[in-house]
Every structure is written in C-alpha cells, then in structure tokens.
Length: 435
Image 1 (cartoon, one colour):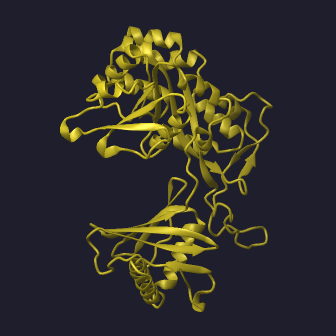
Image 2: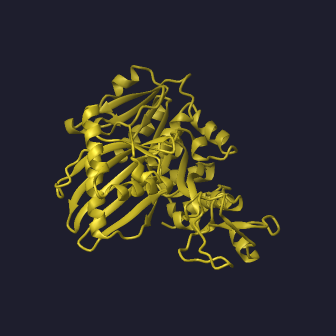
Image 3: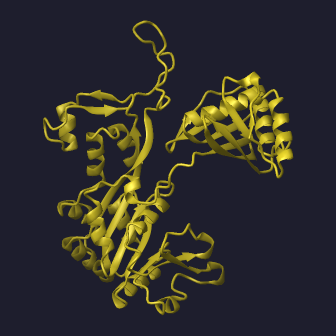
C-alpha cells in the first residue's frame, strides 16, 4: 500500500496497484499518481464506496461518458462526464489495474486495492469495446458478511418453525423458488442451510460445469451433460451410499421431475429442488406446466418456499405520513391499527430549505432513500384441497383462488406487513411485485 501524496490530502487514500512484485506495483502507482486523470480517479472510487455501489458502469461514446451505479440492486444514472476528463480518468484506472489503456476493443480484466477510512476495498475492472465506443465496469468488493441463512435474509421468526417442519419430513419434495438475479441461488443455499445436515446424510446432484459453492455437510455428486449424462445417470451408485436427503440443483424436464417423485416415494427419501417463480403460486403453476405425473406430484410435493428482494427504507431520512383510510382498507389493515406509513425521501438537486440554502442528500443513503435489502418470503404448504385438485388435473387454473381460500399467507400479505412495520415502502413493494 502506498499513500496518496500531499497534493491530494483531501481524501486519505492508500493504493495497492496491480503487479507481480512490490517493485512493479510501486512503479505502476508512481506513474498513476503523476497522471492528469489521477484526481478524477480518486473522486470516482470514493464516490462508489460512499454511495455503496456494487458496480459502476462507464459508457465511453463520442459525446461523453454515461455513468450508472448499481446500488442495492437498482441502477441509478449519474451525471454525464465530459469525454476529455473521462479519457484521462480511464487511462489512470486501467494503468493502476494492470490493463493496457491503448486497447479499446478487446476485453480486458484487471484489479487493484484501495484503503479508505481504514477499510480496504478490492476493485475489479472489466473493459470491452462496444458499438458506441467502450464500456468499462468497476466492481467493488465490500466484503459484506455472507447471507447464508433464512435469518440472514430477513425471514420472520414465526415462519421459521413452519419451514422447519417441512424440511425435516422423512420423505417428499420441497422446492425453493426465486427469479434469476433475485436470490435464486442465495435462497437455495439458505434453504439447505436451514436443514439438519448433521443427523441426516445430504447429497446434492449438480451438472459438472455448474457446481456451486459448497454447503457444509452436503456432498456434491456431479454428472456431465457433454457425455450425455443426466441427474439420474448414476443414481444407483448414489443410493448405495444410503442417503437420507437428495437435492437436485435443476429440474430440466418432466422426466427428471417424475424420477425425483419416484425416488421420494419408492426410496422414502426427502428430496429438494428449485425452480424459477415470482412467488410460490407462480412457481407451482410453472411446475405444472412441465406436465409431470400429477397424482405423483400431488402425493409427494410438500411445500414451496419463495422469495423476492425489496430495498429497506433509510431509517435516517424516511418520511412518515398519515395514510388515507381507503388505502389501509385496500391493504387489509384494520382502521386505527397503523398511525403512520413511511415512504422514501429521494434527494432532489437544487431543493432549498426555508432559509434558501440547498438541502444536501442524506449522508446515510446518499439520497437514494434506501439502505440495504431484505428478503420477502412466502411459504406455501400444500393443503389437502390443493393436493386433491392437483391430483385430479381438473380446473388447474382455479388453483390460485383455491390456495387463497385455504388460508395461505401470500407474498403480498408478507409485503404489507413490512410496509406496516416501516421496513420498506408501498412504492418499493409495488415496484418489485409488479415486475
């Protein structure tokens, strides 16, 4: 690490440039510090950190540099940078990351480290030529604690025992459901982590090229699609190990789904898998669209755990308001139960206070109105009326209403609870659930 010289003491920064040796790193940093784009580079990196942006994307065009940051999973446009300043900043960025500035078309990948306010951040830089010019992504590693459990993701304590009862069954099929890029893998890992993997032997069947990070006490068994293999290619060998739980990372088709159901029934095993779905009911309908053996599915499917992710309101600047009684009625909240609901305070440049001074953005959320995210969970337990309807295969389009009539707590209900508690806003819930 080398400290930024006195000419830039406004920001206490220390860099570790790319390089195989300390001498190479020091020489690279010495060159960058003298570069005309170094100050702009420092400002950009600190801006990414302060705004908690996981990634910044810089699109270099003939007209200028278009910038957007991804913060709490949402993209935010930033002010356009003039091309000359952007080019100088890019030259410094590529050099400190060990990349070739003169290469503007081929894909490049580099990295470096920055110590700011006693916290070390690793930055990864990826550049690629595009039709309009060049696109550069700057990824920030905040070293946030892993979200490995349903508690980490924000599941309510009252839902955990209900989930546990489904997970600890001696046989059947339990599913997790989420959308790609919205916790699909995270929820899967959290569901497996919620199981008792110390008194039961767990195995997960995965395609060789798509093996995911290990879950403690879950043994991975792989197959190779390139060799024409499928999840059941070596099931006989797996059964010789006497597993008590077998998880399948994918359900590629109805044949595999039917084989999983047979496994649960004939071998008296608990099985797990996952699929895409906006909510538990949507996931069930997608499962039915695969056209599996419906009586077998009805007999073995025990439940579906689904999750969406919403942003949490910034507790420093959220704005309380008295809700219209008609709004509370539409949300199913009894009159008098809630005095205030909350919404985000979004920073507006140029907004003035009563003294005529510009109002700065909230220092906690930097004007986005939100800090962090939380899982919005739904747990569908397959009740007998639903089981009978699936088995009959008749009038399946009426399943959503049948599920609602069974007393199921929907994802919308869970969302309204988070709104009522002031954790998130009605607008944020609508944004997520309506897409």
